Amino acid sequence: MKYTEFSIDQNKIEFHNSILRKETILISGSKISEKYSITGTEHKIVKNNFKVVSEYKLFADRIVNLLIEKNGKIVEEEYVPTNLKQRIYWMKIRLLTKLSGFINCYISTK
Image (cartoon, rainbow, N blue to C red):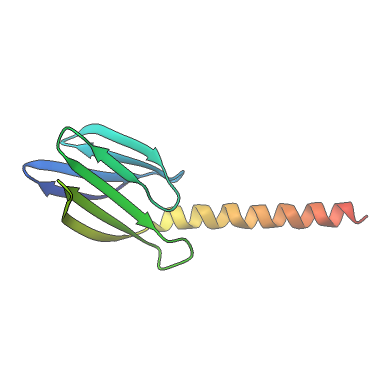
């Protein structure tokens, strides 16, 4: 799911994040970097001297902080709210995990 895009030096830099927390960086439509992350990570793009840094604080304001650096200087910064579908998905997983733990506890006491 596309979160945001930046236009820097005639390059369109796109930031995508899937439900399973896989971050993908595209530059002008070409996949440049792909990493799994829960709390954020750093994508180095050597060819263009870019660095894309994502930061997400668990249990906080549900906002992803994105920084674009070029040659060590911050060029762009954006705060992007997390997707509602992704939040609902993770809430369901937490609920099912707690429910299965409760059921296992209940069964083991009988």
